[in-house]
Image (cartoon, rainbow, N blue to C red):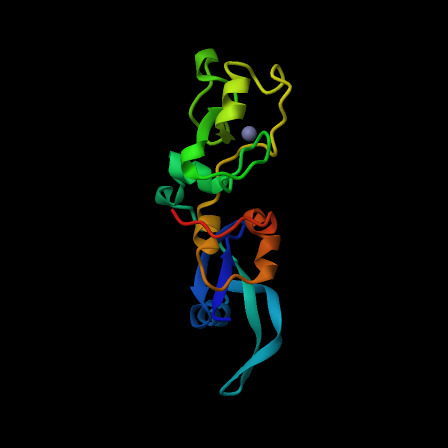
Length: 177
Ligand SMILES: [Zn+2]
């Protein structure tokens, strides 16, 4: 229990810091505690809640480098190596990048238009939309949050973080980019 999830003022996940750093932010009144463990921290003549999730009281602009680049590897990681049409789990070699709105029909290679698909589903779908092919997506594709990728590779993930990072709540496995 040494890492603390930091949310932006907007409640968006922003970072993970050490307990020590979190306490400094709290003492300087730069952050507030949103979730705490049952025990308290006693130091000198202070008694503080043991923070699990804190929220900055001011807004931090998210740097551009925190945007997850779209590649075959990051896409497969986002979709948990699972075909988004039939749900089959497969190895990297057996999976393809499918354009939901096909490229030939103007579909772009963006996080919200690509999904992981097995070869069978990809060829069945061809140049149709999911509706035309009578195929249903497991979930709407979206750009993954950078932080979720970092968190998922972190050794200590507190269950309560899932309230603020949907990817954890969805039970995604450990992935690294
Ligand atoms: Zn499939």
